[in-house]
Length: 114
Image 1 (cartoon, rainbow, N blue to C red):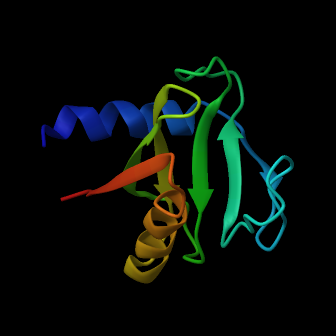
Image 2 (image 1 turned 60 degrees about the horizontal axis):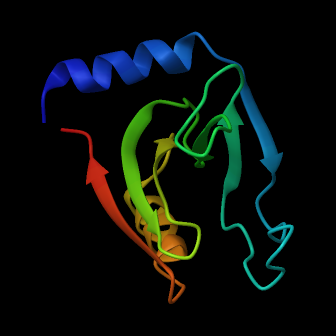
């Protein structure tokens, strides 16, 4: 994948406040069976396809470095998005991808950096 793609995402992340609004272990507000395996939030002052801030997952690594993205499709909402994975181990990346694939309406694909 073109390096400028990742560089542009890095610049976007550096310029935004990271807001965690769904801590690890919390339930989804509309679907209580979905428990967040990692901290989940958004980049303040940005917008994604759904009109809200760009979503991110925050892993356990000390630095919130952009490690990968997850491309998601939600057939029920008729929505496609990318979600940033920041400071995630390989195991956490797989966990996030599985989280987004755990529904009859959603599918996800992990795109690792480098």
